[in-house]
Length: 46
Image 1 (cartoon, rainbow, N blue to C red):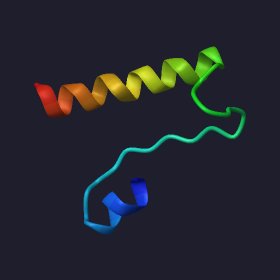
Image 2: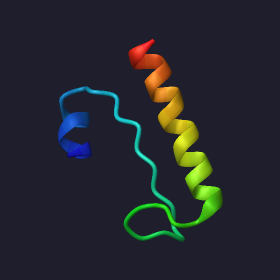
Image 3: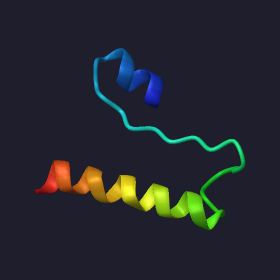
């Protein structure tokens, strides 16, 4: 999905952590993820 959106010129925030599988179980990674979600909502929902 990310590759298809980028191919169409859509900016796609994407986060990958080497020490995680599907989802974010590590507490530090969850904080970083929710911070990114909050910034995304602030930008797009105002």
